[in-house]
Length: 427
Ligand SMILES: Cc1ncc(COP(=O)(O)O)c(C=O)c1O
Image 1 (tube, rainbow, N blue to C red):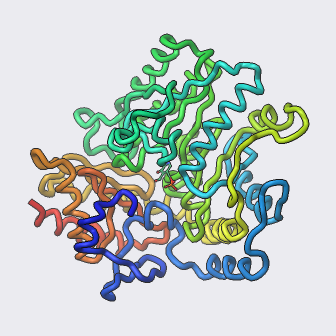
Image 2: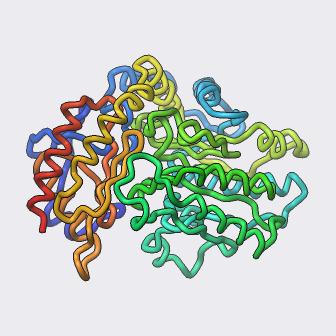
Image 3: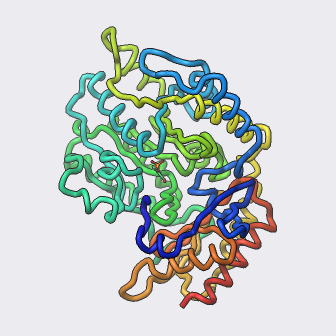
C-alpha cells in the first residue's frame, strides 16, 4: 500500500466499501463524513450520477483508443474545454494518468522547449523545500519532502536546487488566508540565478499552495515576486496545481486565485473528480509553438503514455467539468470560504494546537509534535477522527482538511466539532 505502514494497517485495517456525495461507507457499515475529498480529488462529491453515467456509456461505446498516431474526439474536446478555463494564453494540453506523470512530463517539456529555442544548456530545475510533486524520479528530485527522497537519494536528477519554503510560524501563526510576512523568501531565486547563471536554469516548479507537506499558503506578494524574477531571467515557471486546481481555493485554479499566470500548469485529481485516473500538463501557446510548430517534420515530443487521454477518463473529465459549471461549485467554494475560516479558527486554544491555516476550502491544524515521536500525535488524531466518523488527513503533525465543494455548513460544523473533541482526548 502506498505511503502506508503496511504491517500496522493489516493488523487494524480501515476499509471503505462505498461512497455517495459527502460520505464514505466503511466496511462495518458506518457512514464517514469525507473531510478530505478522498485525497484532495473528489471535488464534486462521490459517485455523482452524471459522471458515473458518462463513464458507463463510454465504456460501452469505445473502451480504449491508442493515443500514439491515433486520436479520439473526447480527448480533444476535453483539452479545448479545459483550455477555455485556463488563465492567460495557456491553451494546449498533454494528458497523462496522474499528478506524478504530469509533473515529470512538464519537466521534459521544459527541456524540449529550451532545446527548440536553441538554449540546450538550460537544464537546471528549481523546486522548493517541503514541495510535493509526486513520486516519479523528476518529481522527487524537484520535490522537497526529505522522507520521500532519502531511500532513492543515490540516483536523483543531478541539476536541481530548492528554494526555501515559506512557512514562518513565529511571524504568521493563526493567519486567516495569505500570511503578511514572507514575500522575501522569493529572493532566494535571485541568489540561485547569481550562483548558476540564468542561462543554465530551465524552470522553477512550485505548488501555489503547498498541500501534501501540511498546507503552506503563499505569503502576500511571494508568487508575484517569483513570477517577476522568472520573467527577468527568462526562466519558465511551472505551477503544480494537482491539488489547487478545480475550485479547491474558491477559484478555478491557484493561478486565477492569486492572479499570477505561470508558463505551465500541472493538474490531475479534480480533473475527473477522481472517478478515472487522469493528469495533464497545460502549456502557454509559445511553448506549444516552440516544441511542436517549430520542429522538423515528424514526432515532436518523444514522450507519452499508453493511457494518455484515455476515453473513460476523457468522458469522466467532460462530465466533471459540466458538474463544476452547472452547479457553480468553484463559486460555491468561494462563498463558503469565510464560514470555513471561522470553523478552522474555532480550534484556537484546543490542546496542542500551535497554528491554524485556511484558504479556499483548505484548512490545516498544526499540532505540537510529541517529544521524540514526530507525527505520532497527528496520526492518532486522524485515526480517532475516523473512528468518530470523520475523514481527515494527517501529514506529520498537521491535520489537513479539504472537503468536497458540495459540503454543507452543518457538515463543516460537525467536522470541526468532532476534531475538537478528538483533540481534547489525544494526549
Ligand atoms: C502538488 C502535487 N503534485 C503531484 C502529486 C502527485 O499526484 P499523483 O499521486 O496523482 O501521482 C500530488 C499528489 O498529491 C500533489 O499534491
